[in-house]
Length: 101
Length: 109
Image 1 (tube, rainbow over the protein chains, first blue to last red):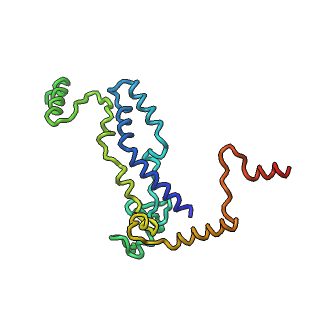
Image 2: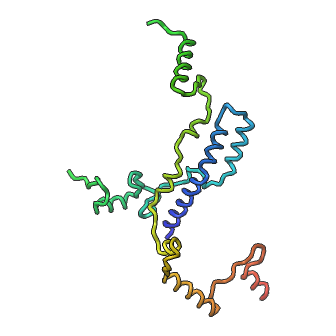
Image 3: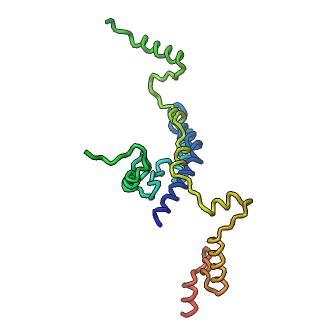
């Protein structure tokens, strides 16, 4: 069941990102603000570096909501290509139809 | 068309900023405003996976209902039985202490 584990890990990352987002933004504002003194900006950057890895939004990955697969995700549906096909054929996706011409 | 002096264009820009309440930044200095202006991404990030409903979670949420998770009870009872027969999981080694295997080696050797 390793796929499920990765989804759980991703859920945890998402909640940590949400919890620290406001503070991180404040530090980012100070660190990237060229009108402030370099010392203050450097301090803010050092503070940013102390945040754990999972607080960065870039660590969050959109995985398949059905199977947990990490690759081949269709972002509009949040499904991997295979689950997308299965659901589309069961006509569970509104407006999706098998092509035929 | 007559060319307009650069200073006049700057003056117009400054006036425009004061009218529309935008910040006048002719040298394009980075103020970090975009980090404050951008919407927070956390709330939508958390909602990505559909919420799961499990029996254990329901019981935890509503303790007043008096529901019992029979599978979990059975598991705990089985574990207790195993432990009573001396077949439980071995104790975890504490930090700094040698592992059980190392201890056994030392005794025999």
